[in-house]
Structures are given as C-alpha cells and as structure tokens.
Image 1 (cartoon, rainbow, N blue to C red):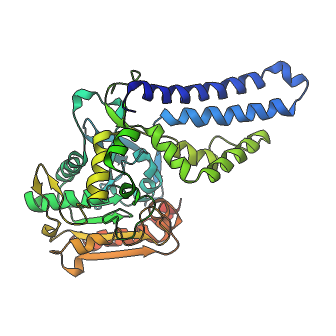
Image 2 (image 1 turned 180 degrees about the vertical axis):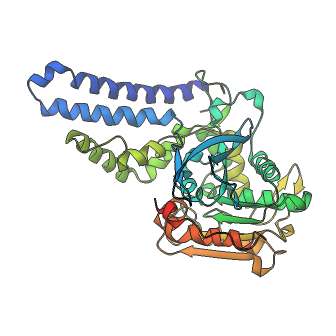
Length: 424
C-alpha cells in the first residue's frame, strides 16, 4: 500500500466520480430535453447534483463561516480570524471580535486531529465566542506539508500544545475535545514539570480516551485487534504527485472516510438516497440539513503516518497515558506533577466512541491535585457529537464549563454567559 500509485488511484477514483456527477447533471439538464419532460432524466440530474457535490467536498477544506456574533450590547460585531502562532503542521488561530473589549475568559480550544478539520468544532466556537476570548488549534492537511518539514508524531503534537499554552500565558483555560484529551493532559503535565509558571488555570477534557481500556468500544478496541505491521501495511500510503507533500507517508483522508462510512453504511446510503429524492422534488437547498452535515463530514484530511501509528501504539495499545508512562524525548512526563491546574472531565452517557469511564480516568491520574480542583460530569442521553456541539452542549454542558472556568480563574465571578447568543 505504501506507494504513490495507490494514493493517486484513490484520488483518480474520487475525481472520476465527481466528473460523472457533473456530466450527468449537465447532460440531463440540456435545454432541449425540457421540451418533453422525462422522469428518468430528472432523476439523472438529481443524482448528478448530489454525486458531484459529495465527491467534490472530500478535498475542500470547509470555511469557518463565522462572520459576526451578537454581543452583550445587542449589536452584531464582525469576527475575523488571525494567526497567533504559525507552524508547519498547524496554526494557533484567534477569533477576533471587532469593537469588543477583551474578554476575561481566555480559552484555548484544542481541536481533534482525527480525520476532520478543526471546522468540525464550528458550532462549539460559535457558542463560546460571545463569552470568551477564543483561540483554536487549526491542524494542517499532511498532504500539503513538504517532506522537508520533517516528522510529526504524538510527541511533536504534545510539544505544539506546550508552545500554544506558553504563548497564551498562565491565565488560559484549556478545553480539549475527543482525540487530543490524552495529549493535552500530557502537555499540561509537561509544563508542570518543566515550567510550572506557564501552566493554564484549568483544563476541561471532553469525551477523550484517557484510558481506552476502562470502557472499551469498537473504536477504542480497534488497536487491540490488529498488529502495528498490519496497520502500516493496510493504512499507510505516500502522497501522490498532485500535492506539495509528495512522497510523505500518510494515513489518507479518503481511506479514513471509507472507514467512517462503513461503520454506518446503511444510514449513510439512505441519507443520500433521500437527498436525491429531495432534489428531484425541488425540496433541497444549498444549506439544508443534509448538505450542512455532509459538507463537513465528507471533508477529510490526511494525517502523518507517524502520528497515526504512534497514537495507536502508545495511546491505545500500550496505554502510556493511562499508565502514566508517557515520555517526550525519552523523559518521563509525570501527570502526578499537576498540582494547581483545575481538571474537569465531561462524558456522554450514550457515547459509543469514547464511552463513560475513559475520560474520567484523568482524575485518578492527577494524584497531586486536591479533590476540590477536580470535577466531572456525565451528560444523560448524549452521544459523542452531542457533548461538544449538540443540544446537550448548548443547554447543559457549556454553562457548566464556563462556571468551572470562572470558579478557577482567580479573578472572581465573571459576567453571566450570554445564553441568548449561544442559543442563536
């Protein structure tokens, strides 16, 4: 599998399907055919429209699409995105709200690097912006990073987070969503041992696999069912000639997407079939529920091979974070050294990706942290997505997280959260 030809073959398959969809739409929409309406041609046009959009989105990075927010003064304020820290494998971006005083809550939102772009947290960002000065990790697509930039594994990822925390300063509150939770905990412990004065005020871990074996799921148990050799042989490819990262070993986004889709193949198949019928009947729209979801879901990014493989081996197979045995450049990162950073875990009762028990394990690892600095919450009825972007997040979890931030800011209580803006 580790050949450019294999990578290019997948891209050729995607490109061909996009072309077939565009061709079907153009042919079936030829004006002369409208003289005699034909249901078959109308269905062909609908199929082509859905197919072209589907395969086109797979290689397009979604836009954040956050142009303005409503602030406490009741006015809409423009939002701009600026790079606070630039790096080869990712940037730290700041969402700047024009005409608004700097918010006392400075929040670093650590986005997952697990196949999708950071824009997966768009609704999370929108809900936090009215009440926080928000910074987000924006990871780059590995296919666009030249080989000359070097490697990027779990240790490099952790050091990126360390640099972001140091840049933002000790009055920062960190929120890590899903995949980065274990490495964000490690980054905090690294600072506790090396530069205690640079530690953040609080750390909120949402639905992350701190201890994957605490409550195994099909996703977290995957690493125990295959060998590292099998993973390297089946999942790793070299970037083809079309992109800047030509020759870089990656876990391709298209291959990841195939895995995502196969987990709920029947549901996705039905969703696309229903969308074709909606287009056929003129009931679909550019930003309807189907397109809003799949425009984000289908947009996938390549991960560096070393990051994917070391994540599986060190986090899932060996459980280095769960056993407090994680090292960076050969030096042990002791989670027990976290003594001042307040830690909160959030889990969804119906989470089938990172089940309850996996994330709360972080509190047991923080042996040097007093109990009053620890907190946990399990959201009833919430699945994985709901704990950071759904109704459960907006109505229940977000207010709890902001209260936790305020309780550990050391500056007294902040103004109440703008609940109306979050609801919008």
